[in-house]
Length: 288
Image (tube, rainbow, N blue to C red):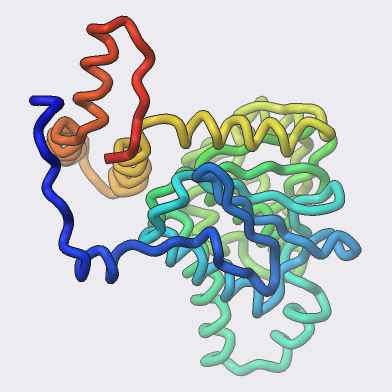
């Protein structure tokens, strides 16, 4: 590819409908910050170990839905304030009210929570969960639905749905968790609802690695920054294929990857990487 070749401009009308800037977005029910391509979500109710409410579920779902159109966010970090990740659905603001609802409203709720996981898996940005302290119920699901997970030795992750009389099949847990830690281990956690300690979670493959609690936020940001400096368009393709290939045969997956990789070979980043290699330099990826 000729490096002096002029890249055709994109129709502004097309950009207007498919590109958004989220750096100036203000979240209502959690903290949101964008810096150098990394968007950070901080669940910020530390006095209650950062539980989710009807409002925060919906706002998280909508934000992750918008991320597929974001031009200024290439990686997302999810963390909790005050030494805990997330204690799950708020007992008083969610669990209590659910007791009084009828089937149509209950299905509205369970579909909303499932839509959060769908939006997390559908957004092209890799999601890094920084898990410390309590990570329970829906909090464990949010960590599970992320692409990479950093934890601490003191963290306690629990899919505790059966402890409140519910099935472990919540928000995709029966589909996703076995793919991370294996069927037998996932079955144990979902049947018993017990807590999984940090060292056990790393040993089982739930956490990519453990870091000290006071270094967790920095480590998550460093990992996110490393991903943001990479070929972000190609990373988005990788995330898409990791998700879509669950439902493919090996033959279908190989063909799908052939098509996806051919698309990546058309990017400027692929050309940049080649010319940098020839010049014995480190490539500077721009995500196009």
